[in-house]
Length: 262
Length: 175
Image (cartoon, rainbow over all chains, first blue to last red):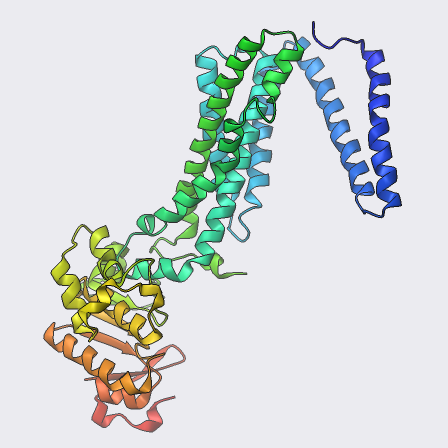
């Protein structure tokens, strides 16, 4: 089975399905919604990126250098994820020192278990999409966790200072805020887990179904993948809170100066 | 705590830099100018640090509260709903519960009703004598400094300009 048309037919289909988007863009200009330009840019950028990655993958699946190229791709994923997520911690000095290892720890652990359990054969067509899911999910969880943690700490500075002045260690003083930030970061993932298959058919399962896999096998595989990715996300959230402590407090267990900047 | 550019601060025969910060802060407790209450009752607030350090004892909580002049009925009150002056006293009781060797009070009477000012000052003096407690009291009120202290240090531009007794302290010395 798989996709039921040739690449050339695909271009015609793409043009036909674009007609709805063209209509939306025309409507946007007509109604002055102000989203037309950004929408067009996003479609061209996103579409272009997908075509580029498709060309890269076509090459990767054929070349003997795939191991080397996959390493480059994985390193890029970690660095881009760490850098993107670090932007959530406004004013935190060198925030990528927190986000990059946290994303790396969570996603790597998830991928390692997938590989060891043979759920992810060590071939590029398995590694790349699963790594994308693992790193992407870890990055989102990292950003959400860091964003919430920063907000909680800044909102409760005087409370934390009061605790510190009573001989409570920095670790104990922010324990509650760590817990809140981990929980908040996992809410979208848990909600998605609860509604799996009801509101949406997740990516891996949809892909397998389109490729003609038995729905039960596809569902089973999706659960395996999802559990690993959620597990990795939790590790990431925990690592973020753990690693942030060194940035939040000075060596004398005081709140760092950057937390007082607006 | 900031590492000094020069000199050192000795507490209990040791430079404060050599202490584990959280351990130092159990013996040398700061009561900040702004009294922030933790969520919960007055009793939970006073017992909070004791619980964290596994030292909770109801008698200590009650004694700490009564030393600040608040009746025991306050123990069950919601700390967040107290007046500014009451919060200040709970904040003092929270510090006393740790049985520290020294208290650092940052403007401890700020926000206290003028009618209760004398009472709070007297309470602090009473419990510090009773507990043999050294108090470092930071104030901008020269008259208050003269009323409550054994020794006054005048600080100008971050430097101690004089250290003297209240009876010898001159108005002109205060900046």
